[in-house]
Image (cartoon, rainbow, N blue to C red):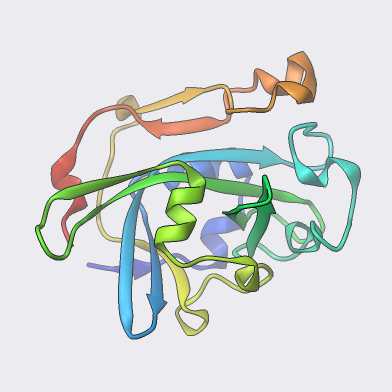
Length: 191
């Protein structure tokens, strides 16, 4: 059974949400089609003290969504070519979010499982761009998260350092805030 994840799910610490999103689906309604991707990798960014977080430097026009309510999307442009999608977590005013890094989906034509390795590929497949930033993750906005009954054992989720955040210094760059499905479980990608 499909259940849309509401604000209550996201109104928790970023690390908990990041871990619990593994096996959940991000769903996008775009031009009459519904695209659904099972999330297989996430990263938590935990508040203004987290030197790897965009919010570390405070409230800016770019980071404004991170300071908003839980369940709002924070989408930003990077390297002059890629959009990356995050979902805001925790209480309003505390800038924390989870980056959706990777996922898998069943190809509608062949049924084969396809991997989206990297947050830019995932955002591109889902047709996510900056226009989504600040929008609530909910069916009426066309982008939402679902629990489709997939249950993944904690032992099947690995935690490690976040990717590409060495600039954050030794303490914050080593936080085990990257979560990924550590077992190849193809059957979990059913529609």
